[in-house]
Length: 203
Image 1 (cartoon, rainbow, N blue to C red):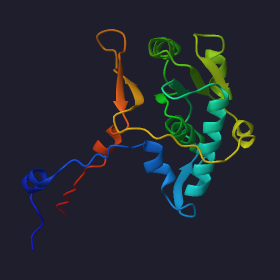
Image 2 (image 1 turned 90 degrees about the vertical axis):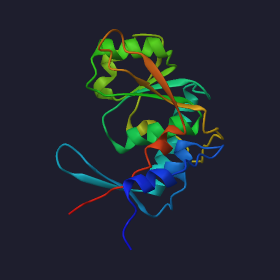
Image 3 (image 1 turned 60 degrees about the vertical axis):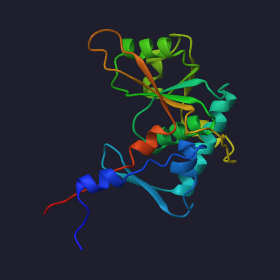
Image 4 (image 1 turned 180 degrees about the horizontal axis):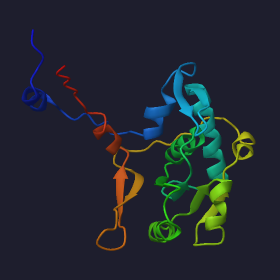
């Protein structure tokens, strides 16, 4: 039996978007705690393995830290962190609270970050000690400097938020090639659109 053609796959496809959907619940919380979640490699070549349970605990601890900083449902939370497991935990934490994630690369220039902070009305900016000096005292967002101690002192008790698939989840910005970068809100359901792939390897 030959595999379906691309045209047949497209014709038979139907989007299945549940009425209630939360990215953190679907991507993080639903997985068995004992299974491997990620293998992270640092710039020096060392690696670190995290189980889903460890990542879930980090995400809950981060959610408690954000809540202690005043973050509530619908607030915009800016994140300027290097690519680490803790950064992933903060992303999940934002969604666990029903807040809106604005993630930015540590390679962004200060002006680019400040524009996004001001334009988005971000309530909190999460960054690490290496970048904290760039933003301390700038803008209206409160600053949370993320360290190991920041998460370790928080409870790993479960945090979750019942969100609709259409509730806002993430704020992306355009490249700003013809003017200032403009924010584009994505709902929780946007992630489902990135899961619909069919690979055809003709080897």
